[in-house]
Length: 158
Image (spheres, rainbow, N blue to C red):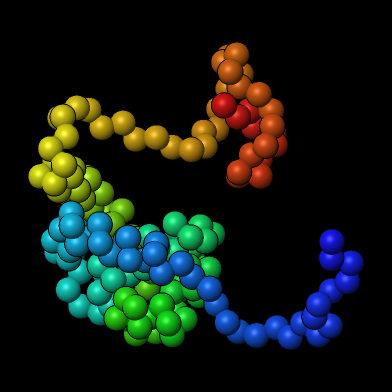
């Protein structure tokens, strides 16, 4: 049983840790599904949209905090090297997400096509699942006051 600290002086540093396996898995699946063709047609100038997206997905699978923190994480020299990116401002990532949002229907259809080509899934309906719902009104018996991700304890949650 350890009864005392083995280190007396903890010296903070700027080292970062990131799981290379997650990054490699994201890159592998991105290439396997041909997602470069899906997203590449929406942006031709400036930062590569595909590299930004692979970096963002890798971040969300490892850290999963805000887009602002994603920008800081991706802008580490080691991460930039892996994704062949140059330093960028936070708004660049927001612009990339805006491009995806403006073309969402086409992107979903293209990703579905890529998945069907690779995995031969049965063709069924697409159901989008949102993780947090706010219930406006008081008629549902499912609505309860409780934890709100929007910091709105006055609204019922489902």
